[in-house]
Length: 263
Image (cartoon, rainbow, N blue to C red; front, side):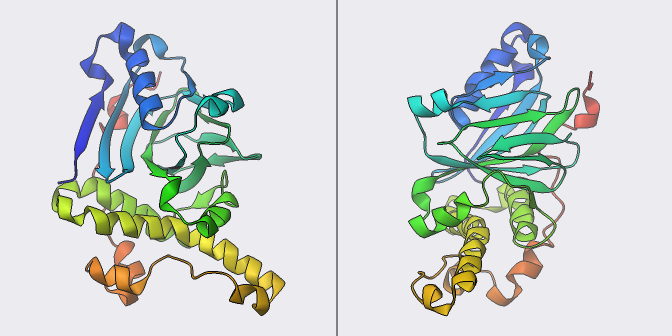
């Protein structure tokens, strides 16, 4: 089993639940202004799983807003990429980041950079249900960061392209935690990094095709889905995508949202 910590606001007194939640979110992601119309008796549930320096946290929570301002980013930057996968049971998420705005719905993903302002809000009277991922930027080469920068704040479909591989892999890590041993962490982390890097590599490939083969020759190899790494993880590179999208359907990552009042 991967190292895991559980936070349930039901475990603390109602009058301090929201304060406890805000502190936990700031420690997990980065300092931000968090507000909610349910702050007087807030409900949220999350688990923190660690893959070395990478955090995964399935979450369900009442409608709330998360704002990281320019001022907060200037005060201190944990230098993280944040990824959200929206799961069934969630309301729509309004995302404003890197001069891009969109609405994320079930099975969508998006990526944020802690060095830039962001504003994410769950629709009023809805629950937010999903999987969050925090990855230190130091895990990526500069070429990958260039590509990631081009997809920040964009809605990424979890049902097609590389999103259709990344989404079930995240769900698998959460729902099958007990199937893994600490010795699996380096391999699991590397596969996750490769899957996150893949859309960035595609952006770089697009740039190379735009400027011609001469430019492409000078681009370094893209470190995603490398056959040698997949082999070390026990996966068959030729079957990686097919196997990934057939992971067992994840168990509810947190308490059943239907059991909670949405008012």
